[in-house]
Structure formats: structure tokens, C-alpha cells
Amino acid sequence: MFSLLVWVVFGFFAGSAAEWLWPEAKSSSRLQTVGIGVVGSIAGGLVGSIITGSAYRPAGFVFSVVGAVLVMFVWRKINEVK
Image (cartoon, rainbow, N blue to C red; front, side):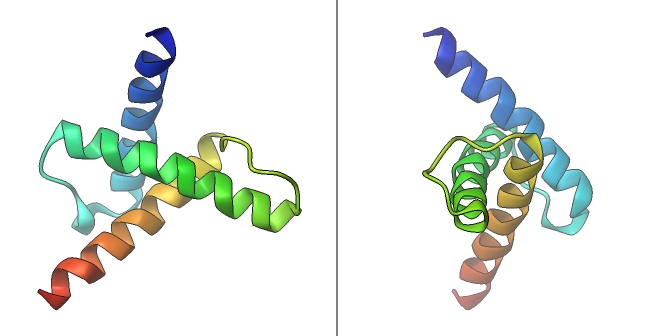
């Protein structure tokens, strides 16, 4: 239960930082911010493991924010097509 809370709080901060870096892609709710941050952390971990060539590990804060910005970019491109 505690690890879920840590994921939510970490996701909120990573998502908020990503929205601060890219203000025009701002999400509409705090729940979306948390989701972007958590998915960004997973994506950042994948990017980090590709760069370092090591096994997948959860991303640190910097890679989580980079992953969240990447997720916001992809989400925005998907929604433009519709």
C-alpha cells in the first residue's frame, strides 16, 4: 500500500514538472497529471535502460520527467489525428 502512495506522489511531481516544462500540453486534471507522471516514469526507465544498455530499472526523477514529456507529446499527437 505504501509503494502505491509513493508511485502516486512521485508521479504527481514528475507530471507537474513535465507540465511546467511544456505548458501548452497541460492536462486538465490532477489525476491525469499523476497518470502522465507514472507512465512517464516507466517510459523513462525504458529510455534509460536503452541508453545505458542495462536491465530495466525504475527511472530517477530526471528520466521520469523526460518520459512524461515524451508521453505528453505522443498523447497530443494521437489526439490531433482524431
